[in-house]
Length: 215
Figure 1 (cartoon, rainbow, N blue to C red):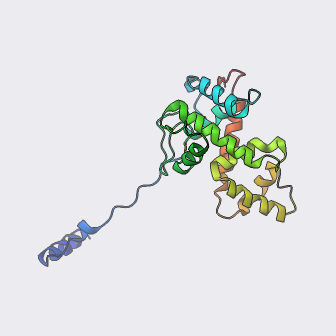
Figure 2: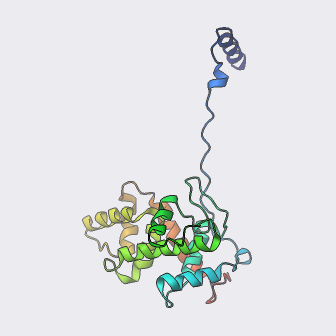
Figure 3: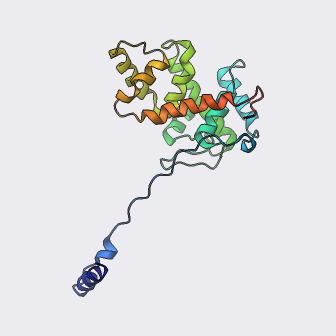
């Protein structure tokens, strides 16, 4: 087989045509795997904790648990400021270019998302924008799940999931209903989103009150 390909290449060259070996395109590289499970407690840094505390207070108020966003960043990037996905998401909070534009439209000072602190700030600001879009339309006990799910999959995806839940005579305002109908929602890689949300809450359970991962 190899000799045959060589012969064809030589024949093409003699005719002044490009050889098959030169025109063949390499197979596209596979996209990198999503962030792995949270690292062991001993490997989790607390260097960004002041930023999570500062911007949680700024965008959600002093009573909101800042550890949720640290856990989210662990799910997004394992707290790696240099993380970059194959679709262009970058930084500790894995912000997409379009997301960056949305955040900057309301918060012009958050334009340098390559800066670690501002990447965290922009991510939490975007969480707040999502939160406000859902506010008043959900069971309050499930607001966090809808916010995080929207951050991962987009709010429109979860609106479609609500439509499916309502068609099935389920309460579309609660997260368990969304999980139940998820496999039936078109154009949604639901396993990824559901795993993402679960991973964040499991990480939150691993934290002590000071945000240190202890188990």
